[in-house]
Length: 219
Ligand SMILES: Cc1cc2nc3c(=O)[nH]c(=O)nc-3n(C[C@H](O)[C@H](O)[C@H](O)COP(=O)(O)O)c2cc1C
Image 1 (tube, rainbow, N blue to C red):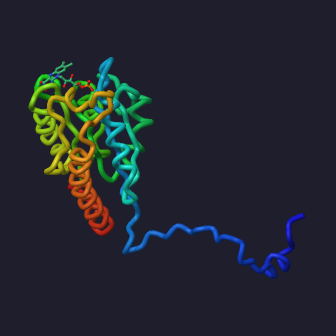
Image 2 (image 1 turned 30 degrees about the vertical axis):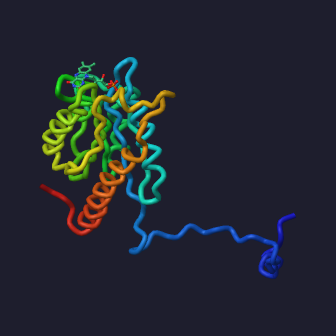
Image 3 (image 1 turned 135 degrees about the vertical axis):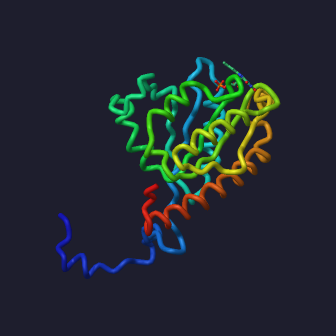
C-alpha cells in the first residue's frame, strides 16, 4: 500500500540510502548543451562515410557541452524536384530546424560535393539559416576533400551560415585505416583536429544563441 502523505513526510532517510543525483539545471555558468546535427554526405553503395561519421560521432558524444543528431543522406533520400512538401523533406525539417550548429561529413567527388548532399542542402532554406557549420572531409587524393569543403562554404553562404575556419580532413582516406581495418589509425591526431573544430563551432553556436534571443536574425 502506498504511504499516506503524513507517512511520507515523516520518513527520515537512513545513512544507507544513496540520494538520487539531480542533474544541474542549465544556468549562465553552465549553458545547455549545443544541439549539433551531423549530416552524412555520401549515399554511394560501398561508401566509407559511415566509418568517418561513426568516429566523429563518438568524439562528439564524449563531450558534455553538445548533443548530436545524425542525418544521413543515404537514409533520407530526397526527390530531385527539391519539393519542400515532399513527405521526407517535411519529416526532416523540424530536426534540421532544431539544430543550433551543423557538421557535414563530406567526401570529394570530382573536386566538389556529392550530388545527394547538394540535393539535401537545396531542399531546405530556413533550416540552415544563420548557423555555424563545421566540416569533416576526405577523399582518395592528397586534397583530402578540401575542394568539396570550399564549395560547401560558398553554398552555405547563401543561407547566411558561417563555415568554421578549421576543418577535419583525411587526405588519402584509405591510408587512415590501420592494419585491422580500424578508422582512424591516428585517433589522437584526428581527435585534436575534431576538438579544435568543435570548439570553434560551439563558440559560434552559443554566441548566436545569445544574439538571437535578443535580436532575431531577419536579414
Ligand atoms: C564520382 C567520384 C568522384 C571522385 N572524385 C574525387 C576527387 O575529385 N578527389 C578525391 O580526392 N577523391 C575523389 N573520389 C574518391 C572519393 O573521395 C572516395 O572514394 C571516397 O571514399 C568517397 O566517399 P564515400 O566512400 O563515402 O562515398 C571520387 C569518387 C567518386 C565515386
